[in-house]
Length: 491
Image (spheres, rainbow, N blue to C red):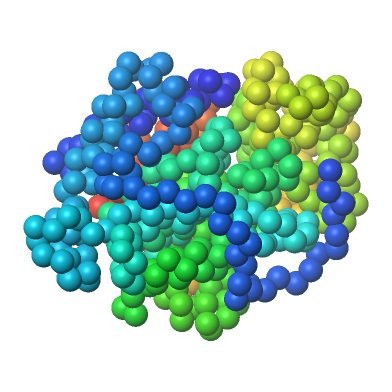
């Protein structure tokens, strides 16, 4: 399944989902690894800002590429779904107006005294291989127009799913998570190391959910400073919620683990984490990778995880192996042109998310013989899971993605679809059993996601459908515990 097919599925799902919601609304040199500590100041610079009325905010949601895709699926789809979102926004306006009238001291007949503000910024963090690097993110919140200080009710941290286009990155466009401002919540979204200001420069960091969780923490510190500079802080009675979908599920969990085990007290006092929701990829990374190695039909999309993560690590982190040791010669020898005149290998193109290069190639890949190095295969062309390279790589993934040593101190909601064809439900349920201490920890909950019966399953389609639906649905709920209204609880 190529990216165009995936994109059209996503577009169709967007249209379907808003029908459902309408009813509900009525080249760097790597350094050695360094110990990581969250700084009390990570903000580097504010690189963009926007001020919206509620109607303008609705018009700003989405991305140019998503709009084009939706229009190709259904003419005028963009204006149609925006009207649905607008009705959702307007349903919240009376409560917000009353809250801000009390705050700014203006009467009911006065012109609306508040607006939605969104800022993009860069901040300091560390890459998977331990280098300090400027990354980018976005924070969106409600504020008084005339500068009267405002205390938001909550903070919502959001770790995005795998992106289909560079304009899907939070710093590039407003997607759906910022809708949480409707509950007077400040929404904080990191691009992570491969996107935003680092697109085409830094390799994908998703091979280490631990480091992505730390990038989320650094982004949060920077976003809090941006808020403070504009007179916005978290209410003393406020709290923080933590959300992640698909590729962003494990980073959200790693943040929750770090918060419980290692976060400095000033950070805890500031955020007051309430709960976490992680959906459609809260799984053991090595075990999931084994599944993908056993199913060549997953290659067209799974190649991002199977090949793209290597470049984020140093050879020292990968037991002495280099990224090129894991792939066929064609992945490194053949060069592809970029718009700026440079050339790039396919291996680099996957890691750096150059979809214009990877998409045509992945359409032609049907077997692992076209992907992995020959010494990693059995005689019949299957991946040899006992190969030293595979064993070492899975050990690396284990080290940089483990949740061991964590007893959740706050509610954690894990969700997965039994009909997910890409990531077996059993792996998600096993993670739940592990994190919950075999169900003994009442803070850990498992939710089962239903799958629309009128969608076909097979070939990873169900994962794409469920994860995207979940991505949007979580944007329409105030707190993680509210997702129990959407999904069924299991023990």
